[in-house]
Image (cartoon, rainbow, N blue to C red; front, side):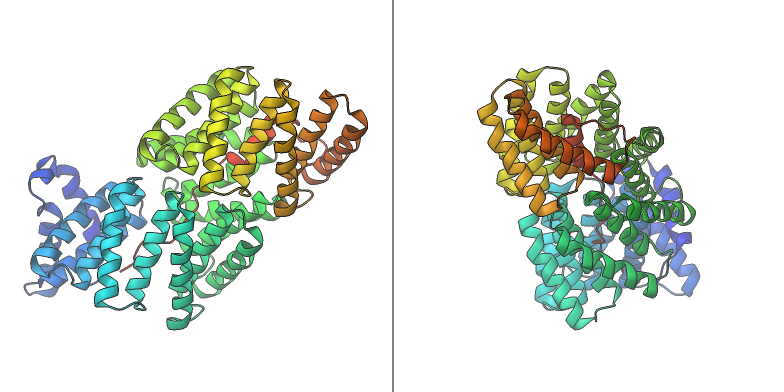
Length: 494
C-alpha cells in the first residue's frame, strides 16, 4: 500500500498533540489516523498488512524528511502491530523492524539499534534467502551501523557481500547496487584507502546522474562524497564545485534545515577551513551547529561533529577561550554516547590535547595524546590517517619538551607513511616535512632542516597559494580531524 505526505503529516499532527499517553498505549495516534485514511481511500476495511505497510511507508517518509524521533514512534507502532497481527517473520514486520533500527541509529543510539538489525538480518536470511534484495538491505544496514561505530573491520565484509550480490542479482546500475558502491567507497575513504575509494565514488556519481537525475538526493550524496575525497587529497579546485552544487540543490529540494542539507553545509565549511577561508567557513559551521542542535538534539553525533568543527575553527583563529568549552563538551558527550574508543571520541581527545599544547599546558595534553595514539593504533591500524595525526601530535609535544629522541621516530613514521598513502604534496605530508625540519633545527642539525623547509614551503605555495593563512604549526595537523557526517545510504526503503 502506497503512502504519501498527506498521511505522514496527519500522523505528525496527531503525534504532536498526543502528549505522554504514547508511552502507556503503544497502539494509538499513528495507526488510528492511518486506519481511518485507508478506509476513506478504499471504501473497505483495510487488512493488517495494509495498515502495517502504510505505517512502514510513513516511517520511511519521515526518515527521509529528517524527522527521526517521529519516525521512531511510528515504526514502534508498526512493529507492535506487525508482530501481533502478522507474525514476527512476516515481511512487513521485518520492514518495521529495520525501520525502527534505522530511526534509532539516526538518533545516535547505536547500542539499541544493533540487536534490531541483527534480528532483521537473521530472519531475512532464514525466510527470504541469502540473496534476496531485502536480505541485502539488512546486510547494508548492519554494515552501516558498524561503520558509524568505527567498527570498520566488521563493516567491510558485509559491504563487499552486499555489493557483489547486488551486482549479480540486480545488475550494476540498480539503485540498490549503487547504494552498495557508495557505502563501500565511503568505508575505504574513512580507512584512508583513497585509490580504492575514487573509482567507486566516480562510478556511483556518474551512474546516479544518468539513472536518477542531477537533483536526486542520492546523486547529491555521491557529489558530496567525491568532493570529500578530493578535499582529503588536497584537490580543492575539484572539490568546491561539487560541494556548492550539493548544497544549493539540497536547499532547493530538501529545505535549509534538512539533515542532508546540513551535511552539505558542513562539508562546504570544511573545504573553506582547510583553505584558510575562515570568514566564509564560520557562518556555515555556526549554522550547521545551531540547526543540528535544534533538529537532531544536543547529543546527536552529527551535532557533536559540528561542535568539534566550530571549536577547531576557533582554535585556528587563535580564539582559545571560545574553542576550549566546545572541545570539552564534545569530548565528554562523545565518551558518554559513543564510548571512549570510538574514532570520533579520539578525535575530540586529540583536538583538546592540541589546544592545550598551543597554550603550553603540556601536562594536560600528554595523557590525551598517548591515549589517542594507542587507541588509534589498536582500532584503526598503524597506517590510518587518524593514527598518523596522533603520532605527529605526540611527536610535537615531545619536541616542545626537548625529548628529541622520542619525537624523531614518530615524525619519521608519520612522514614516510603519509608520503606513501597521501602523496608528496598532500597538505598533511607537507606538515610532516615541516615538523621534521623543526626537530632538526631544534637539535642544531641545520643542514638537514633547510632542504625540508624549502620543500615544505614550495609544496605549500603550490597546493594552497602564497597567501594561505595556515602556518606551519601543530594546528595544521588538526585539519584532518574535522569530521564530516558522511552519508551512508543504508536504511531500507519500502
